[in-house]
Length: 312
Length: 273
Image (cartoon, rainbow over all chains, first blue to last red; front, side):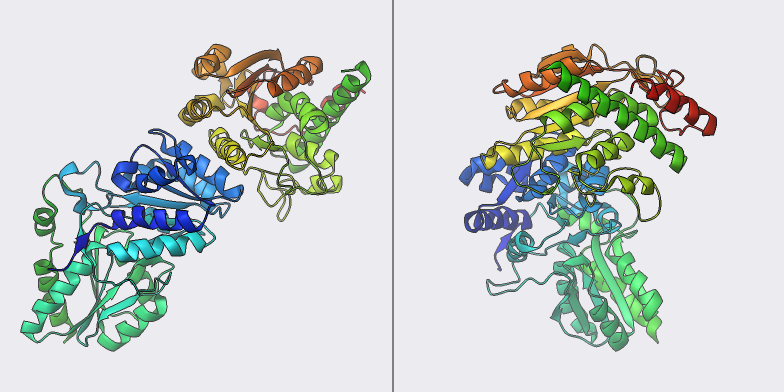
């Protein structure tokens, strides 16, 4: 059994590491530091850990004020509540290209028991529409930790999507996180699955079972949804002529849309978007939800088989 | 404060008002009402209080000024130009392609905050003030908000945080000009008694006549002596101040004077020279 840890844990541990090496790193928390794991940083650096209480707009404004004063602020809350401050993000941070790193945890129906109020399925979509904003979703603990390091050095606004529940760790400590670069996790020939976050793991599992049907698929981790790896997407579309996207997010506006935008202009081909099909989630265990909402590996494999038939 | 200085600041305020009228008239758009109400305060800030150097607009230890009511940019740009942050000629580009933007942008020298969306300035100013505390810098952060703006809940999120974090390097000024876009503030959504509200939120409050230069200057000086808590200066003002037909007239919140109104307005302001 591979070790499993949540990406939010990677965020907290990553913050502690960059906090130690860079005194300008500060964290702004809107009363969810225990859940986002930002409090790991706060316990070590109480003076650089600023609480706003349950006030996301103030959190974003404060982070921006700190950033223009030379600090490197990470502002974290739940993905869904960061959306409450969306217009602050738009008009203060992205409009002025201010160096604030927003982190939204508990994204997707993966969040499980908390139910639909907490399960952000539109965050990738809305942040992707903001000029100057980069959008990242790590798929495991190591990748999240590495992303924190890279973001601390990156100058500009960013949104990082984090996940509540433990996920298998598929990277090792030598892994190098490159903003904007897709990561080929498995090579193939019949189709390509571009996956992000939790769905990277479902896609990898689906790829294994598809071998039984003599179907060989690429699995690509798209950790950066913006700027997306356009070159790789076109290249693998040309190689396979069959593209599947997989995300725990509304199929409108997220990774699937981003890939479709590129392919429709550059290399139209058969495509299937796997995601939450324009509806809200509910309470339950995340495995149960993935089964019900068609996101589990089994469903991914079925959908790949079906779409591949259209190729002929 | 000697009488001569007060007279000088008043004269500058009148110049700011004139420029605001010239700019909005020329652009045939923009916000004269809230520019006229804040002119005296801007004069006192830029020509008396703020520790700034127009030759070095990014100086680390400078005082910061956040114009949260960003629509009142004409008066703000006029003050910045008169202070020397950029050539006065640039005021002619107000709201034109490639020129001074309708609402302030950071690229304009002297601008510390890009306003335009109400309710954001105090939040941002909190961040500036917290950074000052973290770095043990002595600069102060001044932020001007409107009374209509105070209807935004985020203003009160920020107010709570400023006193919680004991930001005694923060001075919020309320341009309490009684009028907003669609009517009298008390009719649209009453925010008074403003002073009591800010007191309850933990601010040291000075309640003044925002058109009385001595009172403005005194309040700004008194703010320096407050420790362990942020300051609120409730500046009771009149929207459209100085031009008879614009005073307390919500129609001039976001409407430029036409040619006839322009002539009349400039004539009225010239009487104060």
